[in-house]
Length: 230
Image (cartoon, rainbow, N blue to C red; front, side):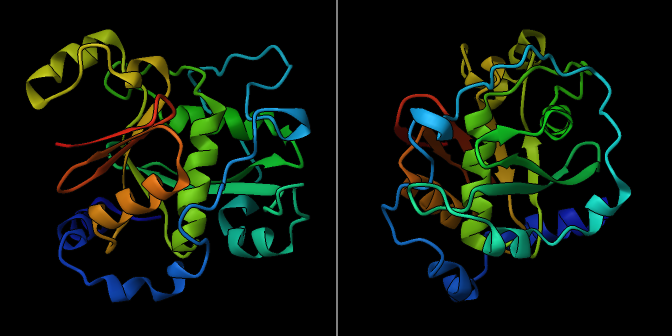
């Protein structure tokens, strides 16, 4: 488990490290590679057919998931028709609550309900303690970014879902009046020792959604393709 001091140290270092630290990540996917399956057939990223609403409390998952080797799972996974790993997991840390989760949320076109629910809980509005069903495409987008940089460290979530109350409170900090955070389609992320500009470049290469380039974090969402500098 990363403690808050480790996270803060990583945040402080993120903006200053050279691109050479990412030599391993550069070979993961060529720029322009379509990382997300198409929205048709068994690889659809739309919500699965089950009727499901994440609860406010995260379900319990097997304790050994914390020791799951996501890199090994990815390398040994069968491939989709597009030639991409068909088993996908995420390692996330919530910056505001210091919660941590490592889990596999998608296997060969099927979402794992408890894992999906726990990821939604990790991206909840922590101020209001409200959990909403997140756009599953967002988790695939985060997976693609994490796959690009490697699975040696977590993606740190600084903001996920926001209620209108929270979003209004953050308007002075630049939050959009109709932010996709309120529509369960956005996340602000940090990866320790990886400059935010580099994460934005990787996310932009995926070619899905909006990319907000900020000094200390990167905004990603599943809305229309666009970029901006904050």
